[in-house]
Image (cartoon, rainbow over all chains, first blue to last red):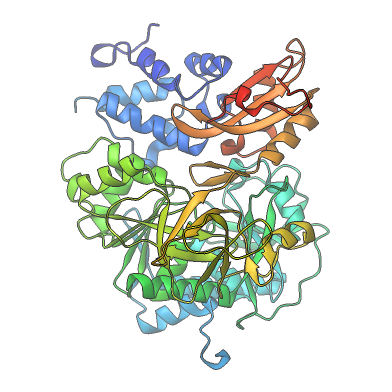
Length: 90
Length: 490
């Protein structure tokens, strides 16, 4: 998988999709996520699974998502990648 | 007792009288004092009364965790109405059915929320405080109840069970006052507490942080949802002293990534409670090792409110501690005979926190409310020193504290798709508890994705199966019974 983000987040989207694949168990839903569709409409993740997935991504990339902006930053694979690019290593 | 009865409806106003400048709510950097909260509630209540909210009138209240949640909740009480808390509409496709079943005459929604699909309601002139009031078409007349008395109904809660649909119950003002009183007494809480409100306030357990804080005149930090990093930041900023958590929250905090200073985030915490599901030993021990604070298991149900709390150190599977003051527990066998200490049976509870029955559900009521006891469906035992142990239950699936009724999921799948047998089991999603569904159907006509889609359209996300198997035939015994071991549930 390629992405538009260089440097430290190269391959980030592929890693995120792989990580989310543990939670999004339906292959069609995971494919929709990988295409950039919003998690809220593309998946049937409950709040517990969503929270745990966020925590795993925080650990994997050494970041912390902010509750105040979570709806925008954790909306799609692209918004996560963009957030990582802004945040990782800062 | 009536002369000295302190109605929960008056907690906010009383706290404001004792200290108008005392902080009631913290949300981000914003603080709302008891004086402000009381003034807003009284003003909104006047508008609600003009619209028709009053004694015996049920108001569905579907706000996310926010200051507006507290203002509208308090205002409905101030107007004499009964709060019917619901999940914010975007999260729960069942909202329309719950409103219809509850006989709510009004629906209060946060700014920007659309009317839930299937709800026939018109806007009223009441709007403000980040919400608006709608009048539900065809609602029943007010019920006969007297607010500001012990028997007055304050809240109508829902509970999952094994009957195929949500069960409703009223909590009286005395139920709430009793359960808050025993928590205050058992944990020695006072007005200096700062609660961390991270659970969804629309649930009976989640709203306890608000109720308990208002009872004490203490503060609540409101988190719109739980993320461990945000909870740690909020606890550090506001110096949290009481955290009502779910086992999933404890698990998450025990293993999440920490930033500088996070280890000290709970240094002011004097009570960390886990309730709603069984806590894992590893999570309990890792949380304590990380933050230096023990996690106390609290056993409570919607029907009974608080039952037991465990202040003993050292984790023991199933132990939920000693009974709270004023709570009586009996253990009974299947025939209803009392069992001695150490024997496992059905747990039954008697206390002033117990509801008396479900609403409009005599069959479920007869099963749960029997002979002056409440049987919430859990199995367990009392040991010789009076400590209660909960062994579990087999009629509901617990998804991180949310109870899923297998029959409800089964009914949805049956109604939506051409299936034969539908088996709903406890499953997993990435090692987390989740729902699993096995259906007997023609794989050419029914796919796992169709089962998931049918559930998503009709059920809250935590009820939607994470695992689905479509089998042309489910294995049966010679007598036709399904071989449960062939289904590979958790």
